[in-house]
Image (cartoon, rainbow, N blue to C red):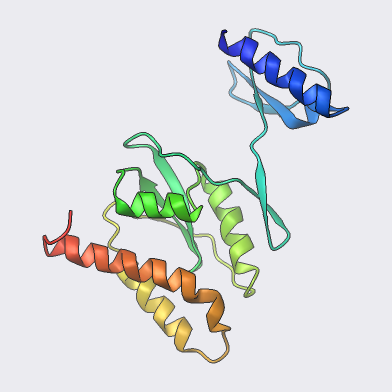
Amino acid sequence: MNKRAKLIEQYAKDWSENDKPWELWECTHISSGEILPLIDHPKWEAHCNYRRKKQTININGYEVPEPERVRLKIGAEYFTPMAGYGDIEKHKWERDSVDVKWLNQGVVHLTSDAAKLHLKALLSFTDGTGTKVHSNASRTSFFGSAVDLSEMLRSDAIEKSKYFDIAELHMKVLVDNILKGLGKNG
């Protein structure tokens, strides 16, 4: 079965379960790359690529694009929300322990916009803000973020339990980076 036939089959399944199945779908115009939501049943035109809309997850009332759940291709660009210091970071998939850990933690996004929204949702638990993008090809900036996070954890004004998972992840990455720098890991 060809790809378009599989999509039509999926659409038919959606139609059997939903009165307005087009609300679950979008199309990308091949020449412009513009992604458009459908407003009626698709016409399956050759100049459009059809797909289901990306699923979302709800984080504290924010609808966030669902993070990636499968490993990316080596060299693929992705973004992660780094709530410990209120920014997002840009990475290249290397299939190392850091990449896999973030994938398993559910924080890998293919667009900066998705990572920014994820960050905003995470920070909404503590009224934090910030969306600067940091390029982190060498991943050495974790030292700074771990120090910043340690300072945050010392503050009596912050509910510490909300940061334990983030702190644990940052500290594990920090240790991995130190060991890599010493030539003792990977």
